Length: 285
Ligand SMILES: [Zn+2]
Image (cartoon, rainbow, N blue to C red):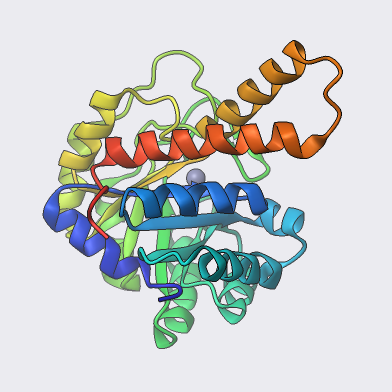
């Protein structure tokens, strides 16, 4: 088995009340950690790649080929999806799909509503013909989103969610409801009531961005409110950096980079396992 569509994964998760983890990957070490964690817990998993990470990898096909090689070399058997995270244009979504990604997010949430609908629809028309899943966003997630940094999230509107889903036929929706990318400044205030209402109104899986830093109870509440895909990024960076910083502080003469990178990689793998258990997807492959 190589890459699978996100749609099947999420429809099953929504029905069975758990969520599939979406972990952003940036390099070989992150890909290895996420795949090993998922395989050991027998869980489906989504590897997300942002446009920034595509640049870091050195291209869409580099990211895709790397993921496929690791899947083959490690004999990974659990369902794996490769997803473009926060795609900013139809062109970039097309490039991801041409390179073999099985899912894309088109984030036209900064545009006026009808332009968001039109851009999202263009991506859906292209992607669905090729069996690729599409995620879209409404409102504005706090923290750093692409080039934009904002402290105040803009909450998604229920009627706009219904219209966007009806007009575009997307497979999953990320409605901004108070979550933020990166570490939270102050207490996270997520509107779970609205999340449940949106879920009941649109009947497709919801996506929660900015899950790093939310309490386990909030994660459970999100899942009970219709969330079937949870995006994690910052917590993995924090785990890696903390472990490496400690190791280097304790071993001032350590110079072999593979020694501390290996340790950092273990910390990411442990964090991914913790998240998979929290989301309830272990044993669901
Ligand atoms: Zn996001």
